[in-house]
Image 1 (cartoon, rainbow, N blue to C red):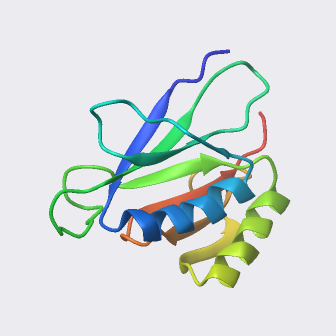
Image 2: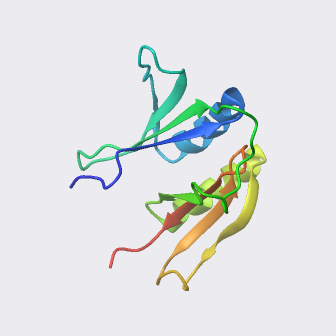
Amino acid sequence: MISPLHHLDLNVSDLERSHEFYQRVLCHIGYRSVDYSVPGEPAGFDWLAPTDSGSRFSIGLYRARGNTSHDRYRAGVHHVALAAPSREAVDDLYRLLLEIGAQILDPPREYPKYEQGYYAVFFLDPDGIKLEYVFTPRV
């Protein structure tokens, strides 16, 4: 099966601060840090998602131009939802988020208004980008 997304690149105000945050969060949920530098392109960081299907998805970070803070209600990204393999994985990430002092918007719980069995935690990255780690049972 081919993943519907290949990669997602985010612009961040402080590359080192965001690298430290995403390194902790993404490696905790099974992503692996990879060296992906392209001559002539700005420096950044990349992580490959875990997969056993042969598909590829990565998340990259690059330094933003200017000092504009993120507002998810302006044009652009509202939030990024990453798939969890289980409810326990959502709870496990939540504990890490508390440990690293991440801003939690909503602790893990069920959200039946989205779909049956929808279980997620919502939190912010250092630039205020809303992130979600969500488990949904296979139907």
